Image (cartoon, rainbow, N blue to C red; front, side, top):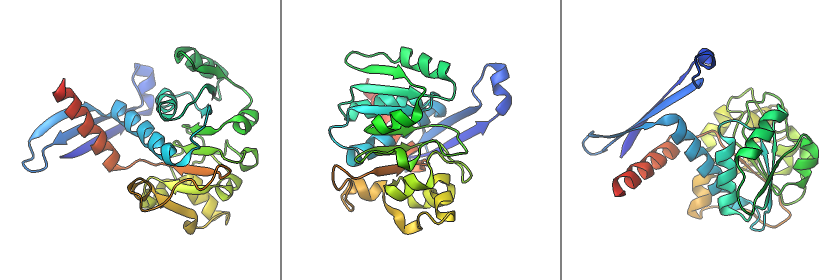
Length: 254
């Protein structure tokens, strides 16, 4: 199969009651070009982004991780929380947002049996408390500081999708073993990495490996329980295609 994703960004859409970012995914038969499905691209992107983070976490976070800090309360946050709790025995989740009201609303909405979800306004203390930290923000300045991180934590950086944006500081990048979804994407779009390289905190060689090598067994993931791991994603076309194929197959199987 093959596919094409189109994305439009209209900053004024909020005044119309519409999302600023809208997308569509067009799935086709790769041998004939026959159209197979037109899928709502915004939802598909959220699904595949959270799934990629969970896949990386399965190789990189500690198997006994019970505490999750979600930094950000936007549209991706609930998907990331569900994805991480699906692959680790998470019992407690804290949600931090620049707007505490948004963090509180998200925590209320995601109540689940056996899972304690609460808002927090203390980002430093919560970062030091967490076993997994997932960030999905539009921050242009570091939110997570390397000095806050405890041994063994896994840091999942999903937001900051431009070269001038970042969610972590140089110390966090320097302390962690660094993994990416794709090396080419990370070195052209990931501000967390590019700005740390520019500052001299790390070099390109600090990138241990990408998601393909990690999942294929060509490269090892977490080394020991005390290691700090960091996964930086910027998105990849292959992730969209894999998600679209899965949606198509499941729809046709029902």
